[in-house]
Amino acid sequence: MLPTLRTARLTLSPFTPDDAALVQRYAGDARIAATTAFVPHPYPDGVAEAWIATHLPQFLEKSNVTLAIRARESGALRGAINLKLTPSPATAPAPAAAPVPAHAPAPAVAIGAGESGCNPHSAISVPHLPAPTAAASAAIGEIGYWVAVPFWNQGICTEAVRRIVRYGFDELPRALDRTLAEIRAHHFVENPASGRVMEKAGMRRAGVIPRALSKNGRLIDLVRYTMPRPHDPENPGPAGLNPT
Ligand SMILES: CC(C)(COP(=O)(O)OP(=O)(O)OC[C@H]1O[C@@H](n2cnc3c(N)ncnc32)[C@H](O)[C@@H]1OP(=O)(O)O)[C@@H](O)C(=O)NCCC(=O)NCCS
Image (cartoon, rainbow, N blue to C red):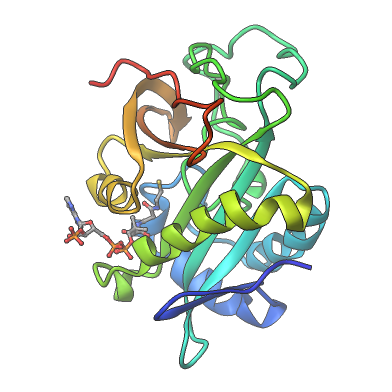
C-alpha cells in the first residue's frame, strides 16, 4: 500500500478518485503547467481520474511513489508530490537508441499527466548525465511536485519535500526493498521558486542541463539539484554537472 506520511502541518497520503475534480481544477491552472514537464493545459476531463488510477500499480511496480499533499488538520488537498525510482545507470539496460534530437516533440499529454514535476527522463535522453556514484544495486529517486496556486509561498512544498526525502532514504528500503543512492530534482531555469524549495530542503545545485526537454516547441534548460544518500561512506557525493 502507498504510505501515509506526516509532517507538522501536512499529511502526504494516497490520492483517491474523490480528489480528481480538485486535481483538475488546481493542476489545470496555467501557472502549474507553465513550469512542469508534462502537466497538460488545458487539463482535459478524465485525465485526473486516469492519473490517480496509475498510482497504486506504479507503487507496486516499484517505479513511482505519488502522494497527495494535504493540510494535516482538514485533509484538504494542497498539491502533489512524487518520488520516481529508476535503477542506477550502472544496472539499467543500455539506452535503446541514440540521443533524441534537440527538436524532438514533447510526449503526448496523456503520458504527462503522470508526472508532478520536471523529470526529463521520459521526454528526452540526456547524454551527459553524471555517472552513478554509489553501489550498483542502488536506485536513483527523482522528486516532482506542484502546489495549488492559492497556497504558494507558505512553505508547503518545502515541508513535503523534506518528508519525502526522509521517506526515500530511510523508509523506502523496508517498504519497497529499494535503497536510494541519490535523490534528484530538476526545475526549469525560469522557475527559481522551485530551486529555492530544493535548496531549503537541503539539496545541492549540481548544474544545468541545456535543452533537456522540449515543451510546446520550446527547448527548456533544466537545473538539477541532488542529494546523496546521507552517511554512506561508499557514496561521497554525486558527480557534478558544470555548476553554472
Ligand atoms: C514550485 C512550487 C511547487 C513551490 O511551492 P510552495 O509551496 O510555494 O514552495 P515554498 O513555499 O515551500 O517555497 C517557495 C520559495 O520560493 C520563493 N519564491 C517564490 N517566488 C520566487 C521567485 N519568483 N524567485 C525566487 N524565489 C521565489 C519563496 O519566497 C519561497 O522561499 P523563502 O521561503 O525563502 O521565502 C509552486 O510554486 C508550484 O507548484 N509551481 C508550479 C509547478 C512547479 O513549478 N512545480 C515544480 C516543477 S520542478
